[in-house]
Image (cartoon, rainbow, N blue to C red; front, side, top):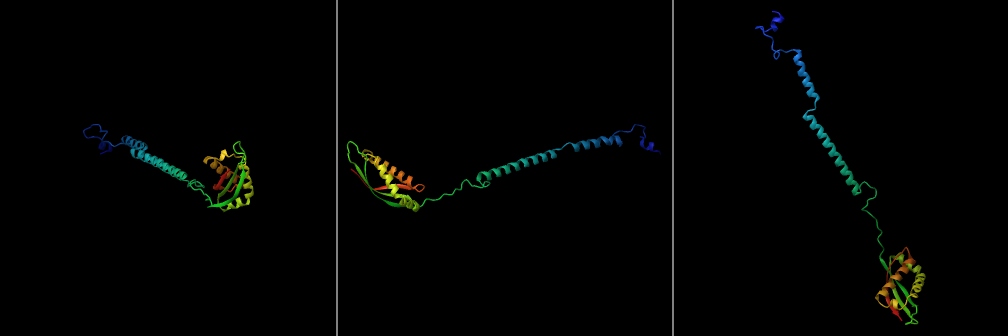
Length: 191
């Protein structure tokens, strides 16, 4: 038998194209498989989305960490919540010599005067040393100020409190940069 006879159908019918295995029929199947390989599948799309989600998540975590470190001050050389303060020295007291000064005359009081015995509270030993060194200048400034006042200005509690504030300002101006805290009256006599 020849090859043609083998391929031919014994009944003389035409061969069935579905049954026959020829190169023409094989090529469309291979093209379909190649086309499916070229198109991204569902798995490939999910993998691409996972990579994108993890990349964004990573960037958010890194940005949050950097922002947290910055706002806590760990990335800056100077920490804003840490400051250094020099605590003030303990207060010390110094007796001011007795002051007797004529006040400014008025129609009611022709020859008024004031006698003061005071103590000053100073901020530390260095302020006390500065006060003692400049005591003559301080007493002169106090007497000059007192001579400008009248009896009426010193009459009530407000007047003596104003005088305390004025004398404290005189002392602080003279002993600057040192500081006096307050002045205490031991005796006040106005006539």
